[in-house]
Image 1 (cartoon, rainbow, N blue to C red):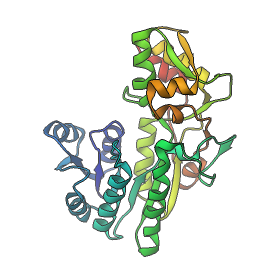
Image 2 (cartoon, helix red, strand yellow):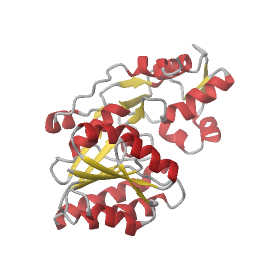
Image 3 (tube, rainbow, N blue to C red):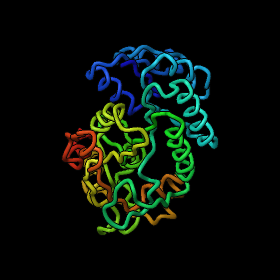
Image 4 (cartoon, rainbow, N blue to C red):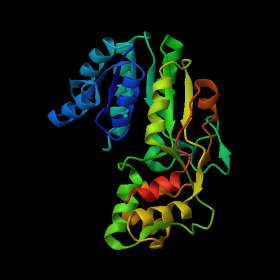
Length: 293
């Protein structure tokens, strides 16, 4: 299969391209710079020069593909509009010939109040409110003959490029303490997934039933207090933890702190059952602690 993806040189893309190549697919990937083009080529993909906002480039690339994986995201105030315009261009280019795999995220479920799956009600923090409407519009393409599928990753870790490194480990390395948001006494949990396991889910999603939604988590719903202890080891300061209120965390991290403070427990059972997905990284705490070695 010919597969085109956005953000091939990004954190998740650097795992998805090799997974696609291993599965026998021919891969092309959006690259906005010479360094990005070199990176995706080294991973085994043919670069397509362009920007995420270049909808005509996206449409043409999708026209030449049998399937598309949209990993790219804008972080600016126009994130919602950029994401939806890119999705529309990619879906138009495919014109129902192959699967369009769109990236969501489990943060839209808010505090889950226990273990939930894809059918749980949504209560997103402000930083991800826009995703809900965009995902509904993406899935609506199934009614017009399209083949949309949404993958909703948990908090992604592994291979050194994850958000916890930027917001927790590296600041902890510099200050000697890793922030713990809230009381941390068993109340908060993170639903995690290793980036290499997530990559395999994206590959499998290309063959999913149109309109499907899959939570990408490895069923390790770990208390935040335990995660922060592992990150303190990675930061080189074992046990160095600083408790922050949510207000203090928002002041330091921005609106991302509201997402980090969520109490989330989710299951990826649907992807296991329907796609045969088998996460192979069962010990997130050990992996997180080892990333400081």
